[in-house]
Length: 153
Image 1 (cartoon, rainbow, N blue to C red):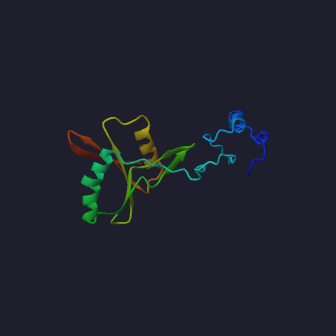
Image 2 (image 1 turned 180 degrees about the vertical axis):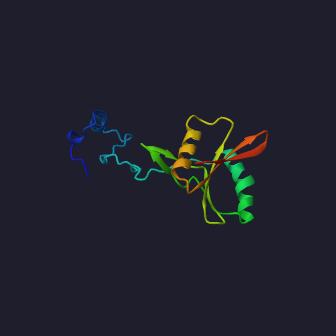
Image 3 (image 1 turned 90 degrees about the horizontal axis):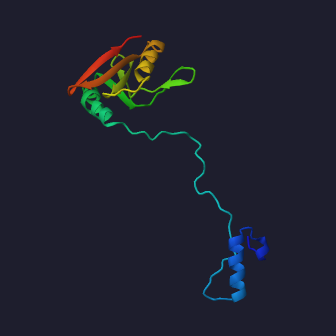
């Protein structure tokens, strides 16, 4: 779109600069009469995605607990935060790791550091009660050693 007169320019600062340059006919001032409308280069997100990386403790858990069990053939198909469970009234819970046992039973693992946030363990207990067909495990570190507990429904 080419602009035929400065009256078509809505921005007063740009219009004034062009008019001054035209009046003075200053060859040092370059005036571009083509003003394209501002186009957003990045469109709005269409898919809600999380870029959450695993914590150092979760990486350590995978390396020290899950990977040896995987190599030994005790578990299969380890996934990190791949499923979210609906607990009710808009509350959701996503376990840290999901795997399948040799008997083809789903195993969910939650790894907690020394400071577990309020509600995190409660969500784990509610998920275990709502989905009893899944085996739920809670892991944490105490005095440098991994501790674990089977979460009962």
